[in-house]
Length: 353
Ligand SMILES: CSC[C@H]1O[C@H](OP(=O)(O)O)[C@H](O)[C@@H]1O
Image (cartoon, rainbow, N blue to C red; front, side):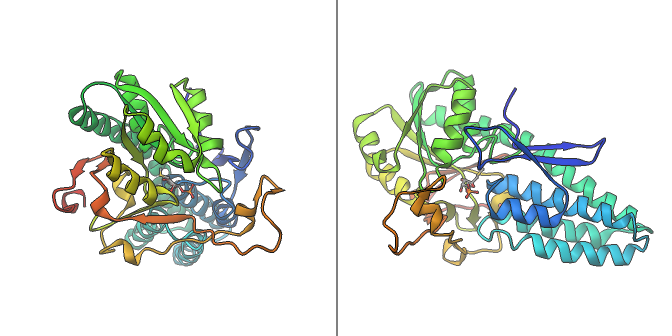
């Protein structure tokens, strides 16, 4: 049974999410009833991961509108309410494109709706949001197999891989993107070992990826972010670095968890293949390059303390960007559910539209 970050019960129309702030010590699900709840759990990173926050955001708004439509029969008034809630939910976190793309798609559902009642409009939104949840798992398994196949053609036999942040079942609806590739390598006996960077300051690697790897009984080792260079220097079996994405610009520049850029520089220096894994919903075809990507800055406390315990000198200044941008020239391949795009003097992502 794989880990489920998001649970939606169609019978009761109840959405619950695994509280990732409590992992790995406690496995607690919390209910998300409306857009306000959705905004809160995304902003506080109770749920996180580009695909996961898009799905939770979409479901939260849809359920909010379903509830509102119980007291509002007028379709146009419900459409206006839904539009306002969608504009609100996208303000929760700015860097990942998935949530804003989902909101745009739901606005298109509203514009195309010919429903004559508020409930009819609401149900169309809910149907779209529920399909996102189901589609994501299938997309991730395609990413996993596409990535494992590409890696197997680049290397001679099983490899060791390094990854950063969490890109598994806890960042998606299930299976994962970059961690999906790791799972696929393992299922095809192509994984010697996986090294997970702890990913300071939120520790997605230590708290979440390690939790998934232990749960799945994969051969894995946790290392600090500062060990990445020595890891590549000391362990020649490390042939690939597989990372996720929050937003891939049209030229292939990729925003991902802070620390990804330096991993890419190290990979280039050490001749390690650097692979970005992402569903096509993470590609922003309207954004020409990574220079335009807004990088979220998180509260200083997330860096100066660990689970409430201060680890830094009081009064010290803090810079806490949640993401960085890896330039396309450091990326060997971008793996999606539709296929793998290799860097051939740059990326042509147009076939992924
Ligand atoms: C499946 S990719 C998830 C992506 O999101 C993570 O960021 P955060 O934990 O802050 O939501 C990280 O950048 C991952 O690569």
